[in-house]
Length: 433
Image 1: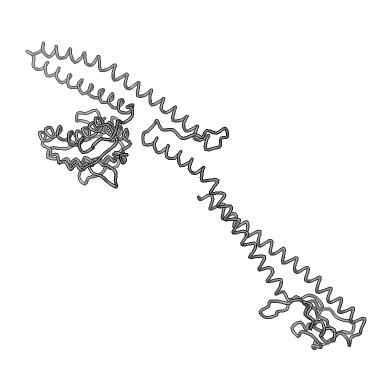
Image 2 (image 1 turned 90 degrees about the horizontal axis):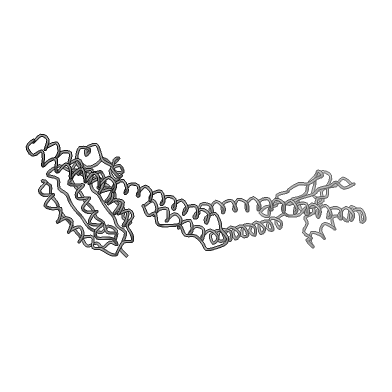
């Protein structure tokens, strides 16, 4: 739109310059024509003076003024005294002059001296030429305006299709930035291509390469997690036998239990990595799910652990339908509740809300604990993202990452907000079809 407006301004400027130059050229041609006519009329008067004498010239002036041939006449004595004709152009001194003629404008006047010393002046009123120039100017401006409107209309019609295609490409990029790597920019089925087609094709090629790279990284992560789980599980079994054998040595048994706990934490991390990979590579969503029902079931399952830890759980569940998988949504709610319980002190109140905001389903988990600084919200959502305050607590750093992956899988937006005090994790889902 800015480009079309700029083109319109350039066209207006071009028409304006063309109009001014055209008017100047027409005015110059008109003036040259008037000068030739006035000089021709003056030459005719001089011929008549020579043929019929000086005494007959006043009669000729009266006759021609009465018939009005488009000219003004004046005959003045050598001292400038008016003898006959229009007193406005009773001039002395040879040459051309513009004489004011009141509201009608000016009279272009040519004055020459006759052999007897008197002054003959012939002029033509420029009012007619001025009206002609005004008509030309109106025509130029009308043509210019019509040209600008036609050009704008043609530009809009020609650019509208391109705008739509660029808009489709922008929507595709927005979906990719939201985590949907399966979407592709639409391509035209045409033998003739343009720059937008080339851009869309390159964009799709870039996405294909990104998908392959991401797939390789996920595969490597999954393979490492799978390969490490087996030997670590065997180590845990051996530690169990060692703990049994060291029953008569409490110090050794305690050391074995601590090692076993560390290995269990590592295995939980690998399980979370595998879970995250499964979520990101999951297939199509099955259908519509009652978000409030899922949240209620998860809340009741977590309530005993939350209350046993000295915290309080409150639920406010309104009706909300989302397009998604109930198991994945349950995992989302569970991870958010576990994150709130893990990173808040005893006595914290945790609130689970399900409602609709602007017609879109929304799930939020709010606590009145210490919260997370606003500048660390992005880091908290990153895989293995753990703040300094939580380094000493158990956990893999993947809880919020898995929740964010589930939200992205459902094309929802998960964000962290300051609850003042505490932290609020809000997930806004698209409207269920």
